[in-house]
Image (tube, rainbow, N blue to C red; front, side, top):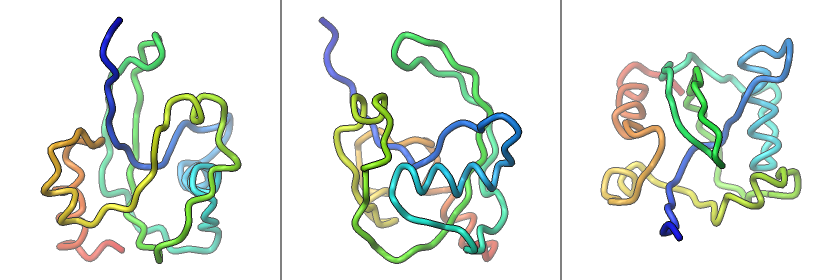
Length: 125
């Protein structure tokens, strides 16, 4: 048996048919955290990338857009999670920039601290 592999990742997911990227952001954050971003200024995309990965035995090639959205700390609500999320997510947590910079754990996207720093320097969120 393979050893368990763990990593941290930001909320998000795929587009529904006909859905715009910003609409998907609002929907995915609501589904995965319980936070409703409707009416929130989302700002520009701070990272756009193509990524190849395997998940649950399926190979994916995915185009991703990341936004930086500052929100107050809140209790994450997982009641809208899918079976896949319940099966594959062990924990959620709030990370400070310092925590992210200091961790030796795997965090996706890999360059998250640099993306946050760049967004801060450019005045995003």
